[in-house]
Length: 486
Image (cartoon, rainbow, N blue to C red):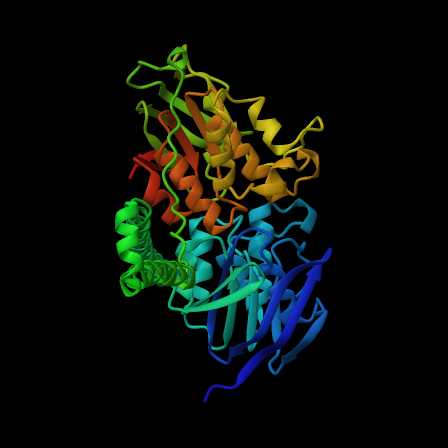
């Protein structure tokens, strides 16, 4: 039997009087490979920090029986001994920490955690700033790791490659599923299908009972009407035959009792709600901004540089109307620089004269004035309020969060709001630079549905393989100063 590395018992963690985690018992065993999923703010990082001992629960206890190492997505790297082979493999420059890029800092922290062996690894969003090469290094390094792994990640491809269990956090509770992320999705779909079948069965039985009760009541009413319309002569005759009246009264009451019994059975039925359906949202464009060029974005022998370094040499391309074009490549290959070259209509770039471009960049979004989430979008969109609310709901803005001040939003919330605004805005081209970074898996899937229902042209940069596979019509890669169609 595998030994237990970490055990949580009767855990309760609250924040501002809200119960964030309620865990009767959870255990990480010696060779477990666990992926934690849940919406932003569900408590994924909190659960990791509980296991680490950084957070003390309000109730319950956490027991650690193994030596634990922790990768924190938000922490800056510190000066620490690193295996020089790893720094070489990860292309980490030998410069001061402050001068490292986001991706280089992530690589350095990974090199530090892999320099020594640890019995248990708690890893929080390790691939946020990594390119596909860095992500593959991370997967390869952990593929044969001999120990317990607990991983929080928004990258579904990484979860599929590395984990054999999923812990889903929802409304403070943790549910365990066997298998990787795709297995988890299949199990959730099966649950949804079974719930739909149970819902239909419930609706059918409720309808049958109510119909039967209604027919009984109609029958009782007919008996009542028959009694009320008997002539005086019949009444006199009936007086001599009391048993007949008694028989009819009894018949009427028994029918009413049968109807009431049926109604009680309806009340006793266990209600089964229909599963929530995440339908595709359509984003129809106003006629005034419809593009008619077959290729609204074109380039002829474009050369892109960063300082004296050539990133792209004499690249020519035609991006077709209404398609999703993905651009991939390693960190530093020139993806974002190419996007900026297009946006600034630099030498060699031709854009449709009617192009109206909405842009999402990797940055901290600062909102300039006080307004609610809902009013922010309503003031920047021509869509009716029902559609606006549906789009915001898909990105987890519901209830009171619609009334939250945009200036008090967290970084992740701000990103989700900006993405909603772009799809609801009056644009015919969207340029998105790493839009899935910092989104949980559910919001990444919502973004996929947005893109599937969007009528305009989209150019995006992403390292998320599954995301690209599911939404891109064309994939280009920047390799050796060339833009190559994959």
